[in-house]
Length: 499
Image (cartoon, rainbow, N blue to C red; front, side, top):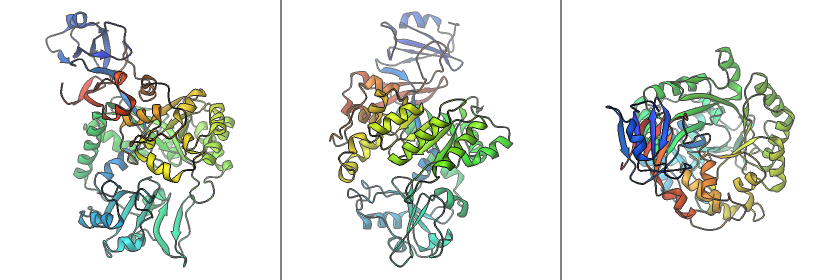
């Protein structure tokens, strides 16, 4: 080990290390030594920072392999309409009335839940018209795949009685054919028609606040799964990373529809920027069945996959429902990736026959066991009993040999990886009720599904977290309480709380 490391972490329980290893040396963004305190401290230099971990666990940095950074930051700038904050329709409307319009003139809310454990129904344009008639109002559904607008909002989007449903989306209508205000799977369509102006300073504050929340869990890397990500989003990430607003590694998926744009600019899969913190990831494909039929259809799905593969990009297919997961697996069997990993995102419904197809496809599955923790009670009330044990079936898929990793899908739920790990092992709701099905065999195994390729070993990137309590000695039901006291990304301390 070269003399004078920049940082030496001492007095730590080093995850996965040999007995006696309690210190880690870091220089130039990588791990340069591991060993006993007395050995590693010999290499300290005049400017070396010595950090006493106070006996806490030192783990590889956690990877949230599927979330939406900009949407999660935007949610922090909107009225909180989640059931815990607004359990009834009138309380949702009160929260919206009390919120400040954004710079673009819209009143925004997020997180409403139409299930029996939420409002018991969808909001409507008529509900939101009581908040404002002249000013547009929009509230995002907890799933991230629906929203409700008032009359002014529908008018701003150009939606009326005669507006046809866009491909893959649905404009909900009443018995008279009038839009109710509920819009399903229309985010991309809306983004093309509604100009939004977000105050730059307010947004940077929100995204830095989000980044701090991620770092406080020990998360050091994320995959942004935006289906519309293109060159503009890439440039935005470069800027935010350069100024330190997002002190994490970011793997940016690119929307399949934006591949041509990026290719014309000379981009290729795996390209790096922002001193290696930003990576260009797979091509995102949205496969939905919310409109009553699968969109895109199977032949079109295969053409999109083949087109991405032809230009050197693996794909990441959004597939929640059984039909979508099956179609994804079958299509990927016929179109193996020439580079990298093809992925199936979510794999929400995975009974045994579906799991076997996924295993045969060779795809990696990025699933969301955090949903079982945060939304498990809603599933218990609304999902058929024979399907419940197979929701977000990380354990069953893992047992079949499928490469599984975990992602939060924030802002759909809180990006707490420890809650996701608890549910992956025990398959219980936050309230403690069992959902059935096969869990991952242990907490260390679950942790490996949330740390990607991060390891505490010589030459590895210094992406680390010091957490308490020690996850290896914590009962699964208590895992959601774990927090980081020190988070290191690329050899730099970016979060500190107590050490």
